[in-house]
Length: 45
Image 1 (cartoon, rainbow, N blue to C red):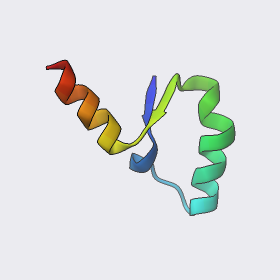
Image 2: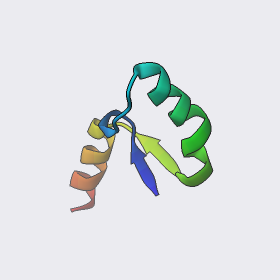
Image 3: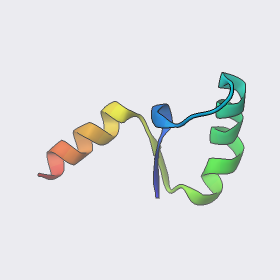
Image 4: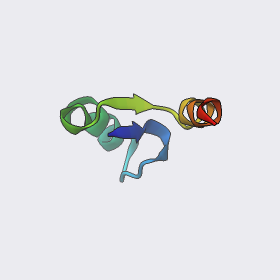
C-alpha cells in the first residue's frame, strides 16, 4: 500500500505527523507526496 502523505486528514498537524511516524509504517510500504505519486503515475503510462 502506498500512502500519499499530503492527502490525508487529521485534526491537527501533530496528530498527522504522529500517525505518519508511528502507525502508517506498520501497513504502508511507501509514503510519498502528491507530486511524487502523480509523477510516477504519469511515467507509467
